[in-house]
Length: 135
Image 1 (cartoon, one colour):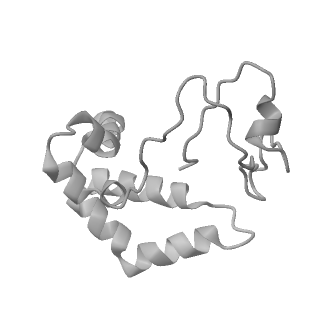
Image 2: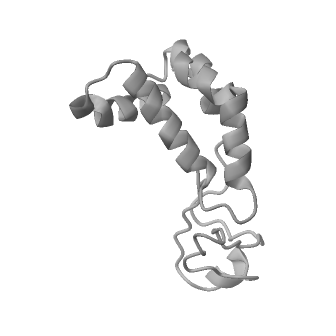
Image 3: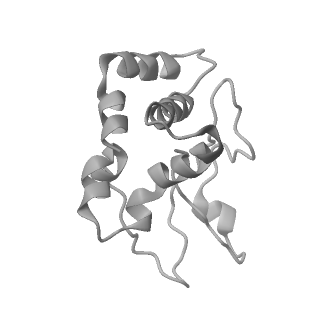
């Protein structure tokens, strides 16, 4: 985790992230992160047949061991995570929030709702709203 954190904060990786998010890029920041994590696992000497498991452990450590401070301190995205549980409960009315299409020029949005809103899309219908980060 420490090797990944150092690599993510390097000037070279930060430049890769910037280039990946530039308009017209064929690559996004998730692809930069995937390549970085794969190189960290390889540099650690993990044999090829164990790399998928090592990547899963690297990416899941904070969730697998929530009581362990080390994964939370070492993982950059966990350390800076601002997500929190919401206040909506079963039976609450859907809030008037915009629905935004998720996509990039290289990956157009799937099922985009354009200028719709949660409340209009759910009006009078049984609704299951699943939300999360694209990342």
